[in-house]
Image (tube, rainbow, N blue to C red):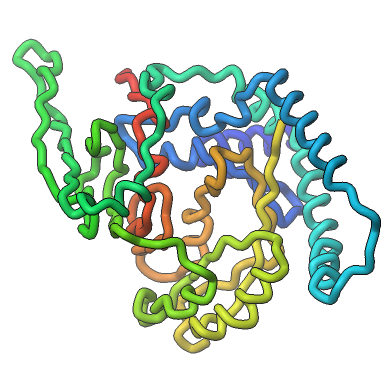
Length: 356
């Protein structure tokens, strides 16, 4: 019976990309499987997403040796911790048992570990040939004086067309050219949309949109206090998820200044464990506190897609409309706003799905 349960759990994971451990407040997420549910003709390339995970053992060893040298260089004599450092130490001591328990749950899930290890053996059906190209900076392009003149070409793919002999006709796109900056770009179709900007090809998921302002500076923390969260949220309530690092100064700013300024109520803390080699809130369900999310990290600073998990705590009609500020990728039913919403939509992160 236990084997049957595990096999059912693993089958659900292979379909959804989410593995829920028994008797544990932790889950494992495979971002590639989760993201692939957002696309029809394309698939996210495992080797491109997990670029650091697919590094050679030699490169990993060199990196490890480099980190050891840096640690030796930074070694200093022990000193008395100040008040903020003591607060950070207390936080770490409180979270350590949660993370250790989550790690133990992962180690016991041998069927899941086998799938994770086999990620190295996966091969993309038709990997993009542009992977070696130097990535252009969307931030820099938005700062130059020509930014208002830049345009993006949307290529709408014909679907369901057949020749008299039953074969597919040559692909003929319907194109639309739009200003790329300071303009809401929307894919209202139920299919993936190919786009081209500055000789770079992008893949936009169905029912998604992005808004990319130009001449947008990097903001100090204090500027976040003026973000109009209440105006951006649904009048009957909304869930606001905020990624925060372990830096104690930043945590204090969020808890003591940012949340009160936004008028939001704290619900729960989720931890991301990286696996390497009010009345208006009546529509919001209670979220489990101290939940641990485990995943293999993708590219630098790329976060796992947890939007689907958050939607579980929103009651009412589906689909929910969502907004991501300072986004670096796109998802269905989400508006992605920021300097780099196309960052991880480049075609080099995808391969085209083969029919049949």
